[in-house]
Image (cartoon, rainbow, N blue to C red):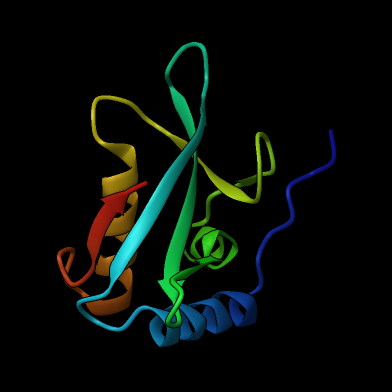
Length: 114
């Protein structure tokens, strides 16, 4: 198995800027649960934003993964975050963490599961 690539500070800062531009305060972040491990300890979650007049989904998972330090997965569809944990709504928790990093407020962004 190849070693996981560490993100440079520049990549993380660019991802922060990209997320802030696509997700201003008050935006709704959509999530899709792509797969769950048999042990239910890990979930693959895609982070999406619906943009333009026809509400085309934009996958922001790669940027969120860089900012949060999560590994990426392409299992069962497009890129998604591999989120480890149980006992919480992990998708909502992930959106709250993104919101807290971007705006120092866990509730600056709203979450909607698809």
